[in-house]
Length: 179
Image 1 (cartoon, rainbow, N blue to C red):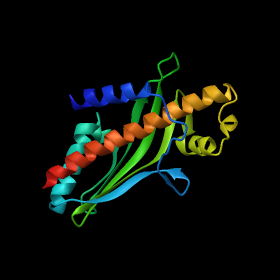
Image 2 (cartoon, rainbow, N blue to C red):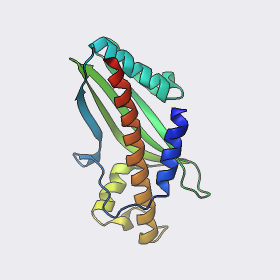
Image 3 (cartoon, rainbow, N blue to C red):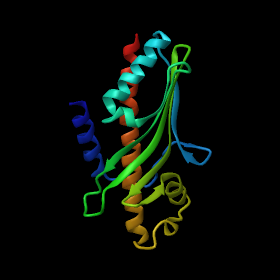
Image 4 (cartoon, one colour):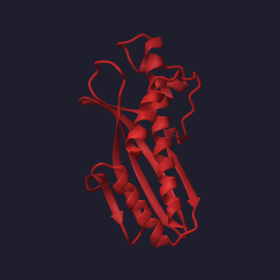
C-alpha cells in the first residue's frame, strides 16, 4: 500500500508546473542528498531497522544491496526509479547510489551518482543540472529547442527531487522505529 501511495504522489507531481529556479542539493558541483541524524535507539537496532527499510522499499533487496556490512554497520546499494514522462519515449529510469551508515546512536545517508538511463543511453543529472544552472541548455540537447529542453529538464529535476525526498522521508520514518 505504501508503494502505491508513493507512486501516486510521484506521478501527480510530474504534472505540477516546475519553477524556473529549481534548487537541488549540491556538494562539490554534484547533486547529493546527505545528512546525519541522531536517533534514540541502540546501534544494532538502528542497523536492523535500516535493513528492514531496504527489504520493504526495494523490490529485490538482495540484488539492490552491494554492501551489507554488519561489522562496520554500513549498507549500500544502487537503485532506480521508473520515470514516466507521459509520451511514447522509451522507458527512462532515474538511477542512483545510496549509502546508509550507523554510528553511535545516529545514522547517515547519502544519495549520489544520480543519473538517467534512456534505453541504451545514460546521462548524469549533475551534468544536466550544471548546464541548466549556467544557462547552457543548448549544450544538453541539439534535438530540441531550448524551451522544450528547459521544460523537460525542469520536470526531470522536480521528479528527482520529489522522489528522493519521499524516499528519505520513508527512511526517516523507519529509523524512528528504533526507539
